[in-house]
Length: 290
Image (cartoon, rainbow, N blue to C red; front, side, top):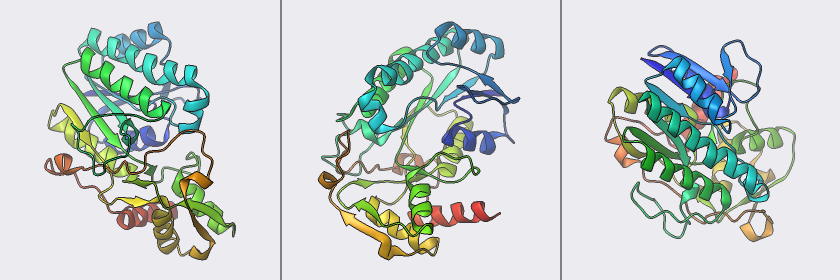
């Protein structure tokens, strides 16, 4: 089976390429990164998207591309709409033409955070533009295709190589290694997710030919301060440098949900294992040292 990963040079895309490589005939795209193995693709260019999919004719397309920086989506609403909404529509239209299954990577930020432990069919109500753009993408996928999988995850962490983007976990590790005191919020609860688990989960869902929405999120909900304490413990760093604060002291551009934790029991019934924070961090640490 031919699988095309759109956004294969990104943090999640790179891990998916690695995890799926033994089981599928894999192709990947990057927005601009020069690589012999990847096709360069701007997903906002509809003709290019259709052209590449018609050329490769994959049976499955995994879409992980787009703008994921929450504050950047707030200040650059036009760019966020073009990448996360129009780009997704272009991919959906191209999948329709070649009758490909689409796997769309979405987010916990489609929820407002007034509840907690959200299930797949809970009502979406995004409170920032990133969440809105991703939810608009979900609607486009559902309306445009019958054969799709939507996955939702939260605050991704893990390790591919030294070129990984500056994730929350990477920022905490580097700051503590440098002896910097950092502020961490105690009133934003998330289900931080190991990228290996998402990639393995997608592999299982594809192999079982599943359809619909699945939460692939860490099995434990915690505040960013709590997560940072676990990072300090696993990586043997100084937790006294962690300063607990409330969200209103951070002055973030975009609003954040108070509790966007996700319930992944639907995926777990399919045999997908979602790590606890400590399990995931230990796996990340061993990959960093190997």
